[in-house]
Length: 418
Image 1 (cartoon, one colour):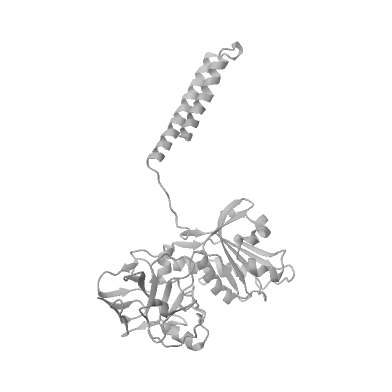
Image 2 (cartoon, helix red, strand yellow; image 1 turned 45 degrees about the vertical axis):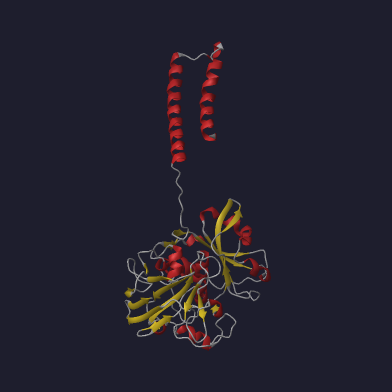
């Protein structure tokens, strides 16, 4: 009602002074001026009527537009920063541009995101979005706690307008005080800047090796999309048990996913099929919802659109299985000659991961610390694929999955329910 009341006041504010001033001789309008004013008033009234019509229509048929921030252009800005007590410049602005934003470089992070999303998401290619070395007024020891957060904004606020950005990256030299190489926010966080308050995502990395940086930035940018870690499921000498609490979650345990620990090779590994579904990169046309037993064909997760790149198997209770096939190419090709099975709790992916790689050739190798630390543990995860002729059986859900055929272009699987 307030909007409509303001419109009436506008009309009264125009008309009332005319009748009041008309009583004063010196303010009497000439016929020509009166005619001109009437035309102006009629135009104003028509405009106000149109506004009122729009307001009434919106009131009767409200529409809510919900956008997915993980689709479309991602406006990334990168700051190369130094500490006030140690000035090192291990790479150049050109190095970082080629590594991250240059879409002409097939190995760049930009191309990694474009491939993963099937061109539904891209990083804007602009060399001007990289700011050359800037010395921060903090020491090396002070930097670790704030490297991937809004606390660095005041030091660079004068350099850029943050209202036009989505993801903020701070790259710094190796830091002996930091217990790891980097971190990122999980999705977006509200940040106060000189221009106002905006939702921004942050990445902070401290390394001087460009190959290491390329692996880490693909991992951390996944966090800014809201992705958790890609973990694995360790149930000792068996693949699955009835009580999930009897199994161990291995942090970073999916070694075939960039959100896990894929650094055993130089291959650039895609995010898994469940993560892509969450981001809106894969939909029901690409992920088959299994409702009956049968033989199905899955195409590599890296393949072009309009093909089945995953199968979702709903289970009773809170669990799903997701099946995926990764292209058997590159340094890790020998480990990917088969079907990957992911165990997924049905709730939305927020914070801690609920997607786990199932080990289809299990060995009792875990040391119980939730991380891959020994060669035996790593080898146990590397042979997780269900190879041609092998069968996975879940007795608690009466489910059988058998890989029938594997080649570079597709995989055939037989699934029996009940």
